[in-house]
Image: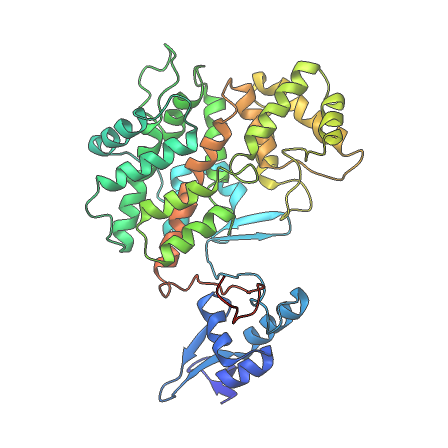
Length: 420
């Protein structure tokens, strides 16, 4: 059973379930738990009575378990999910094999979204929402308290749009793509425009310009709109971030696309994810107000707080998304003070820790210089990442249902115990 030859392919070592369990040092039922979590793939051979497993894949998992201390008694190491969408490697990241920063520099957010969803570039792709969908979402958002945050507004808009779509449970690829092309512009249109006489028609034009009207009271110049559109494209996906994992769990349970996006929106409100740029925004404003990063950084460190906008666990150097946005912001004259403040923050912090700028700091430079609220970065992140969430939901709909079910490692008192 160990050596089989696939038709037309090279020799491939296949292991039985028993052999796989022996290599991993676990029980046979645990092998299938690995399969359900996406850490192993199985294949039922023609005429065979059981599943077989790729020996190289099994041995790689065994090495990971030994390195992470996963062993047979643990939960099997970190959750690993096969994906064709985003690769992060050596301080660069790629969308379906194409350098994401180059893609964002040459194509609009809508075109990048289409690439993530279909693997095809639709030149001139533009997202518009039916008036009925927008009207329902706006009524729901308008009913919220005035102090409601942007992510809450977007989540309510997504739920309202779902309630207005009787075909939302159609999970076929064409139906989900149709939902995606409507949902993203609906989310933007549901947000109230910032009052300003120069926003002649905030519901027309490119998506980035429509979003600008919801974030800034200043007129949208070409350079600033380009920065916003590029930021949306750069942030469209970033592998299995916490919110994306939540989306895949929802999709694994066959939640419809609106619900899957809502799951992602529920996660990004944390200060360590989508809301991180707001902290960096406030930091930059304080640096600008005080004229130097030195005293501001000193107070943050004295209070034991992490400096927002610096460092990323997936990049050893500067976040490539930050690098791309900083380059564009250098061509926006009114961004110069905030850009200088960000460089001051990086240089000051580097005296005691080798931390580089991440995309949250770059977003903060943009939002602070554009006269936007501190929560604007969170809104940009949420709208942008909706494209990636849809891509991951589509991918997950093609997998076995309910496979995203890790096993808990119980560490409580051993039963049986007497009734309390």
